[in-house]
Image (cartoon, rainbow, N blue to C red; front, top):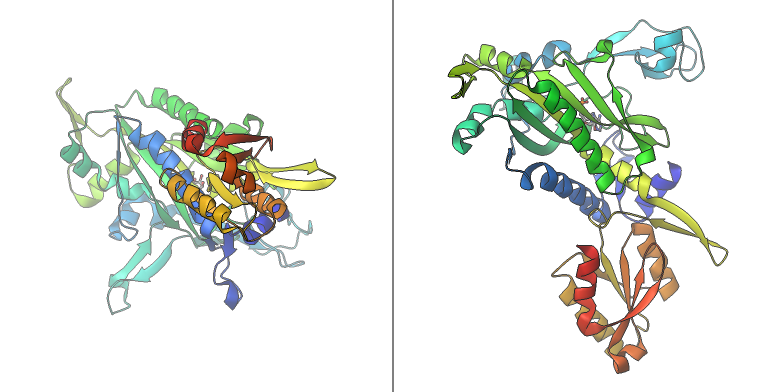
Amino acid sequence: MEKIVSLCKRRGFIFQSSEIYGGLAAVWDYGPLGAQLKKNVKDAWWRSVVLDRDDVEGLDAGILMHPKVWEASGHISNFFDEWIDCKKCQERFRTDEPSYATKKQCPKCGGKELTEPRKFNLMLKTHLGPVEDTASVVYLRPETAQGIFVNFINVLDSRHKRLPFGIAQIGKAYRNEITPKNFTFRSREFEQMEMEFFVKPGEDEMWHKTWIEERFNWYIKLGINKDNLHIREHEKTELAHYAKACSDIEYNFPFGWSELEGIANRQDFDLKQHQQFSGKDLTYFDSQTNTHYIPFVIEPSGGCDRATLAFLVDAYHEDIVNDKTRVYLKFHKDIAPVKVAVLPLLKNRPEVVEIAKNIQKSLRKKFVCVYDDSAAIGKLYRRQDEIGTLFCVTVDVQSLEDKKVTVRERDTMQQERIDIEKLEEYLLEKLQ
Ligand code: GAP
């Protein structure tokens, strides 16, 4: 993990929030490459869950919602973490830490002198308007899902949907985590990619299975090593208050197998609650059976930050080249933040620089393509490898004569001379 954290800072993927003031715990800023990487993760999810399907619609709801939403959803009464302090080493930990749950001891020092468990609601509060009284309290949403449930009828009516259909959204969520840890894995501000798939009651178990498979395969398709992924079904005692069943997709992070995404069968819990609390009819009219009912819902709920971290960890590779360690990020082509880098071999030859800049100008219309002439070629290659750039295009003196450039592929480091005229077509074929 240390290598990943250091590379993320060194190469501009992820920085500590407000670092010049000593940092703000458990909030992270994505730098130039991290922002593009995370955008690619979100775009790949949106493509697979929304754009490539006829049965899912997109949504972008507000972070702030009517406070009644959280009463109805059960977050005000159920969204608690329990924590304990060790009196010996002062470690603070959640009561679901395995060493406490099984042996009632501190996970750090093994001590048994512990405080009583304390409960803590994870929602962050703020006030709307100039007066800070109880009437003005609103919460920063702890999950994006509720924005979908409260818009169920709006989407159903405006888009003339028939069951089964889904509503998807990507957005920020906030939780006042007591024990944030493992880099971006458990943060206080993070992004979720969630989809609520509404189905006819009775068809829920079939759709639950379908979505577990669908979401598992998404990570594999985008290059995650299958050996580093597994599905873990929740024990009945672990289930959230709304769920009938839930399976997590877990990734083998350097700190152990941990949740990337949960796929839950939320039954009709949320719509029923919102119907009761709002007094509005949230039923679906089934014209085949001529009946009204509240649909069940299957929810694949993933974290953008956790997925981004898994893509980074999985992509990290080291090999030995000429007795030196080469670090490279073996990102899938859809995930890599930079697809092509154009590098002039001699920056003091204006004709070479001109060709290189013209190539970049034309390629950047098709994909993310950067230009760099700030170091010697060996160093430039090393930099591009470390950020996972798929192809480096080198322009040299010979290019002036033969109108060809050298294209180097990241993983194999194999080089090919390609006609400048055919370069775009060559790269498009590789990147599609
Ligand atoms: N709507 C269901 C829901 O929110 P969750 O398991 O609490 O379920 C879903 O969260 C996903 O959101 C997790 O699988 C994880 O990827 C991400 N997530 C949750 N808490 C997080 C945190 N503190 N930091 C980063 N990601 C988090």
